[in-house]
Image (cartoon, rainbow, N blue to C red):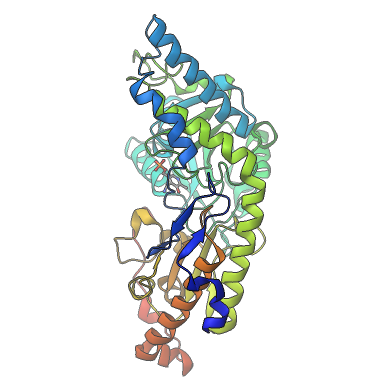
Length: 430
Ligand code: PMP
C-alpha cells in the first residue's frame, strides 16, 4: 500500500475515538487487534472500582456500615448488568468469569436431571470441557451439526431434541468467527420440546443487543473483560424458576443467592457494572464504527490478494471479529511476519498449539484453508490508521510467504493439496 493511502499515519499521535475518555496516545507497536481475546480496562471503569479496594472495602455480608456500603455498591452493579440484557437483578449471579458461569449451569443442571446434554463442536473450550467432564460422569453428550458458514443445522437440531435431552448449550457469537446464532429460534425449538437452553454470550454481551425476555434463554454466561471491564469477574443469568437446578445438594453456599462460596469481590463487580453501563450507551455507535473498519479491512485485503477467504456467515456475524484465511500461508507464520500487529491464530486459548482450529474444523473448512487463518478482532480503541497498517503488513507478509511456499506453487498449478493436510485436525474434544 502506498504512503498516500496511509495518509494520517505519518504522525505518531493518534486519537482513540469511542474509548472511555478521548485519550490521545502515542502510537506504539504492535497495534492490538485481539479484542476478542480480552480488552483493556477503561479509565472510567478503573476510576469507579478503585475506592472499593481502599475506602469501601467492606464485606457485603457484614452487618455494619462497611458491609452495608459494599452491599449497596453490589446491588447497583447487579442492576447495571441486568439492565444491559433486560433481566431482573435477582436473576444475575456474579462469578469469576464466563468459564465458571458455563460450568455452574452445565454441570449442575446435567448432574441434577441426568439427561442428555447437547452442544456443538464449535463451542468455546470452556463449554467443550464441561461436556467432557459430564460425559466422564456417565451423562450422554451429543453434538449438533454445524454448516460451512458456522451456523447450526436446524434440521439436525429439530431431529436431535426430544424428552431425553435436558440441556442444550450454544454460543451466541462464536469467539473465532464472530458468527451469530439465531438464539431466539433455537430457544423456541428447545422449549417446544421441554429442553432448557444455555447460551455462552461472552462475545455478544455489550456488543450486540440482548433482551433476555425476547430471546427466552434459561441460562446465559458473560464476562467483564471483553467489554473493557476487569478480568476475573463475569455473570451467570438464570431464569428465577430454574434457580433450584443450580443449587449444589448438601453445600452450604453463602453468597450470590446461595449459589457460590467465598467473599464477593465487590470492586470487580462494581467494575463490571460500570462496563455494562458504558456498553449499553455506546453499543450502537461502536457497532457502526466497527462495521466500517471491518469493511475497510476486508475489502482492501480481498482486492489486493487472491485466494483470500472470510470464514463464517457473511449475513450473520459480529463485525468486530474477522476470521480470514490467506491460502498458501500458515496462520502462525503470518502472525510472526506481521510484527506491527497483534492478532490471533485460532482462538487465543488454543493458539499455542500448532493444530487446525476446532471451530473451522467443525465447519468442514478444507484443512489448508483453515491452517492459513488468522483472527483479527477490532475494538473501541481501533482507528482507521491501525486498520491501514494491518492491511499493509498482511499484504506484505502474505506476498512474501507465498513466494517462499511450495504449497502456494502447487495451488497455482492446480494441484489438489487437500490430502497433504489430512490428519492435522485439532483433536481437542472432537
Ligand atoms: N466463552 C467465549 C466465547 C469466550 O470467548 C471466552 C474468552 N476467551 C470464554 C468463554 C471464557 O471467558 P472467561 O475468560 O471470562 O472465563
